[in-house]
Amino acid sequence: MAQQKRAQVWAYAAQYRRPRHFHAEPELNLVVAGSATFGIGDSTVQVGAGELLSFLPGQDHALLEASRDLKLFAIGVGAALSSEVLGNGDGVATAAPPRVRLTRAELDPLVRRITAVVGLGGADQLVAELWEAAHWARAHAPSSSSARHVLTRRSLAAIQDSPEISRAALARDSRGCPSEISRHFHRDLGLTLLSYRTRVRLLRLIELVDARAANLTSAAFQVGFGSYSQFHRAFQATLGCAPTRFFDTELRQRMENAFEPLSGAWVQRPGLLIEE
Image (cartoon, rainbow, N blue to C red; front, side, top):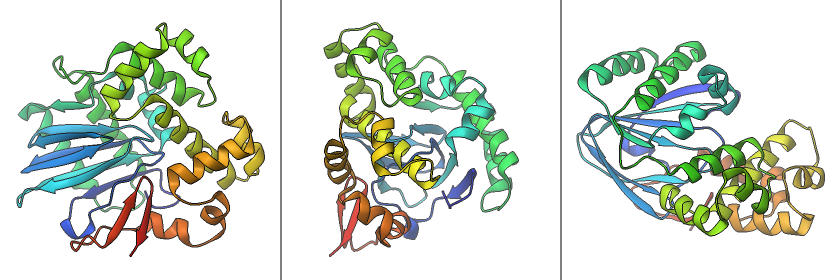
């Protein structure tokens, strides 16, 4: 989302397609017409008209293919506002299936809400109401094979609440053995539990540093890294650059503003785009 915004709605346009990325805000994509193929972690998902797709904070995704008649809207809401609106620590967002097909009676009111706010500035309240309505539709959708396993849901809730949580504590809180938790998590999110926890930690660290609530070293320990060197390795491996370069140069702005040209002239890495 644009800086300082708490909520935003975008309409899909082919020339503004984002490369594979992840971010701190939860996101919903609503397909109104046509079809699309998304890459989510190491999984591929095909969606069609009437389907609502959810992306969690830290879950990488990219639009890989789109039909000529694709009409899609993306809804992004800051994590704090999402929790405030949903009123349960985002339990609905985590527990509901990541992909649901809406009935016409559910789809039409959402489309009317979206078209009323897309592109508007200063419409946080309207987008928040849309966010609540969309999650209500997700929560009340018929049971789906795409629903996440209970161990995955428990792990997500624990990590999002406390990214510094250890593997042993996560297993205890999720009430499952580590190997079983890891297996279901990878199947449900398309990435490993370790990778996801690292991303959430780094996103929380960036939030702390941006708010000047901590310096890099202090923030690294607060979010659960055992040492500065461990944090530095994780940052470099996940975002493709050193922490100081991310915070102290124009690279971060380039990453946030990058769009994928049709010629495919970008080298893609998780979280980083390097122009050839």
